[in-house]
Length: 439
Ligand code: NAD
Ligand code: UGA
Image 1: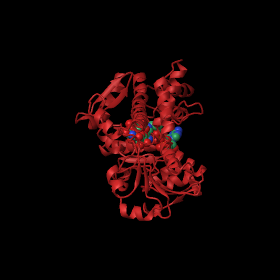
Image 2: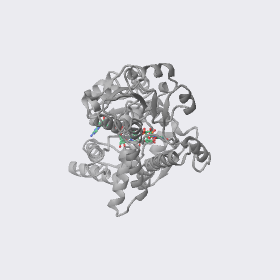
Image 3: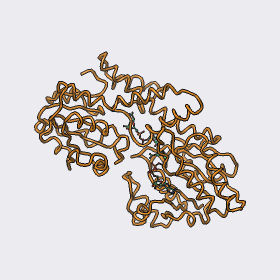
Image 4: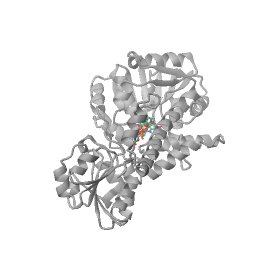
């Protein structure tokens, strides 16, 4: 089978690479000429473990190619996935202009049956708009060509995207024709043989499932962060509480880690977009509004701890930061808690020295020369007054505490990701502050 993926970002590249890996003939399309030129040279625009190897391997096998020409890519293709961005509009709703532009391109260029599958995260009703836009272009051409639309939201996590795609918990597919169901069943067969299920449903339910899933996960995080803040006040330990509640299988252990708030390109935008969708139907999603509010405040919890420790004044202090990306194993800085923390530290008159294993180049786009960037985690500590952990990269988990103690002006660590054993750090002579534990 030959398929086309339009939009060669995180989702498009992972989808294209994984389908080609199982032997499907894939053409990835993007309007960004520079990106396609680089991809054709084997240069991958994002950091995602395992992706570069998989792309290069499948390009060499002739199963994966990249182009800016959608008309050419469509020749002989039966299925097209839309995986372009759906960034927030000014009012918080998802901007569909890129998705609908692809639908129009399809209408302009198809000559045979095509199944158009929306993989981008899109609000309820979008597939109907895709169908309408495509049909309008066919009408403009005065031709009758059969096509179907389907919804197939993507659930991959950055940093673990390949594994999530190859071994999904489930694949959700919204369809409205048997032909579409058969095509997607056979396309996903290689991924479902080991018991990973495809769940077929109507299109509106599939569109809703994606937002409900991300909103549920964001809710778990804001809930545990809220409880963590209360733990600090009443003298409980969130790490113990998490284990205590997570071992109830109805609650589960995952996504219950307290921290400095959720970031990334999806939770913040998708929670906001679902609230907006609800309001368009005159429904007030009160729980999600609280989730957003808690998350906004949580991004400042670590900053407040630093300020309090230094008696309300950090002007002239130097703060060492370990980790800037919104989570480990990615260079993505979108909505990262580090953005709010650095902004506040600088506004309070502090100097910031930061290290991240992968995200320094991305960070430079956000912070420019306002902070200094170090090549090594220990370099940040030279002349620094404290250390703050913002991302739980594995290499931060077992530091040489003697060196840390020797280099820091004040032996104090603010751990925004609860990666250390409090007693051990204290025994090494540090003051130690983390999230959700009375200190
Ligand atoms: P991205 O910004 O990394 O990539 C989008 C790509 O689409 C860009 O390369 C852009 O140039 C291209 N594009 C835009 N308009 C185009 C057009 N008309 N024709 C061809 N290419 C076009 O986006 P992403 O992170 O891959 O996200 C894509 C969608 O998937 C979003 O709706 C997002 O919410 C959803 N999603 C993302 C993730 C994730 O982890 N990043 C996970 C699940 C779902
Ligand atoms: C998230 C979802 O997990 C994916 O299923 C979904 O496909 C994707 O959004 C999307 O729609 O784009 P991602 O944003 O890559 O994936 O990252 P997550 O691992 O979910 O982490 C998001 C944020 O939550 C990070 O800032 C992370 O630090 C934070 N988090 C996560 C916590 O604070 N605590 C936790 O227990 C888990």
